[in-house]
Image 1 (cartoon, rainbow, N blue to C red):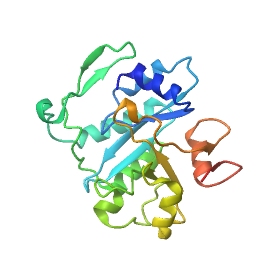
Image 2 (cartoon, helix red, strand yellow):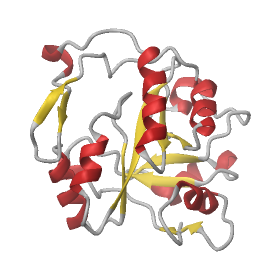
Image 3 (tube, one colour):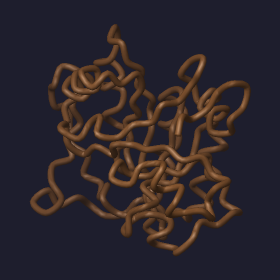
Length: 223
């Protein structure tokens, strides 16, 4: 998943916007954004955070500065050290495909932050909070908690491309009041573009995405 390879594959799949959401970290994102400069694609900085309940949650931002503040919060609440022989290499790779260093934190682990606290922190920093792959049995809010708490203000709910939005609407009628998005959740280059969502925006910003999630002012998600 070298930055240039991610961008090249995304462009070849005719994607207009991608979000880079590494697990509990954002150290590679600046390089993917650099690799995308001059290319017909927008890269949103993000992160996939694991709550203390072992729920995965996506955070999306307009700029890297806000995300780096969140990264510091996550790092301060993430314990453990990576064992490369078990969990794999956690390289930090620049836009020239050069290794800048290695992250020795246990990024696969759960933070000590509760789900509602993470959502509140994301919103405090001006980002969007999206519940990850709700249709999966593991590491999803439904899989871990059994339901979606109406008091947690998710901006949207993500489903996998295996399910898709139309099937998810049939499977989860009780969630009809929530906006759904479909993502590839790609962990390998070959999976980029397998899932995606058509969203009508005037420009690619978090505020425009929020309007689309809320079906306001002509912005909307095509289902």
